[in-house]
Length: 173
Image (cartoon, rainbow, N blue to C red):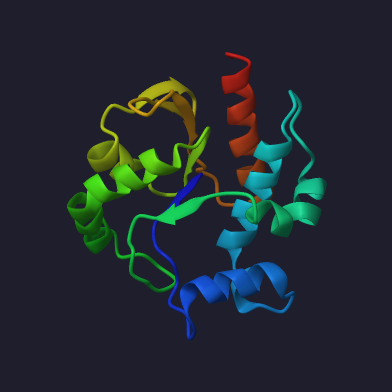
């Protein structure tokens, strides 16, 4: 599961826009960074077998990988290209019980916090515990799960950061 901040505003229904982005090559949503990065990370996590899949393979399979994951936005309304941190933080605080319940109902094996760590730790899962570099442990669900925090800005660096942290978690490094 990927926990994102908010979705960009769409001219059409957001669900339809995202579904179209997965199916149509020329979609504006797919030209953006977020959905493609989530697809690459999802592919890497889905195909992880003790070794980190190549970024090249992740790029080739990113659209199909998005079809097999859950992702949520903490803010349930649309925003713009940049998130206003103050209003986002207020929203996260107000709706934390609902976001927590949404995550509990989905009950994911892995959670990737995409720019949402501070709000998730502060309001949604304050019991989040640090395991390793950028890998946290979320408890309180039916089982404990790793939570990975991408920090770098470049696509290749982000991919390897997410997958290397998951690899370290799986190998107790």
